[in-house]
Image (cartoon, rainbow, N blue to C red; front, side):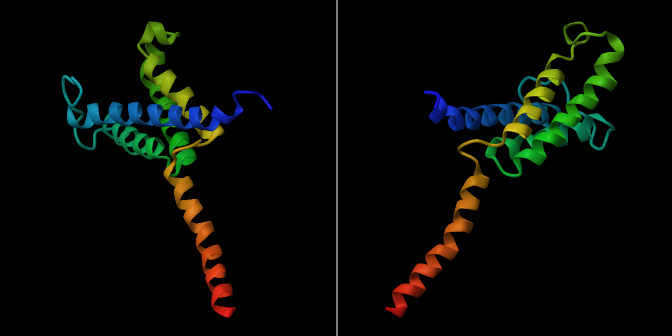
Length: 146
């Protein structure tokens, strides 16, 4: 076993939390004018408002680790869409067309979708509670029988 293997799940969890938080902030900036935004997107405007909602919701879900893989795939796809429809028409490379954030979020979220949530995910806690509850009931029944 590799000497860094015990830390792997912790690093994956921290990576997921940071990526999710930054993605949610990206959406909050567009929706609510936070974090130095010069303006907000108009409610219901296609595609900007919808993209910002996806960023906020999926980013929050990825950050807390609930529905992580689905939220990460949806967020990654929205960033791929943004790159190909908004950025690519103005230049080939992300450094030329201002698409660095879209590209980085797309690939970072795709990585999260494939690797999974790692440690510190709310879904891990919920799964643990669901699987331990029947075991506890079984133990109590055995204790009562004796």
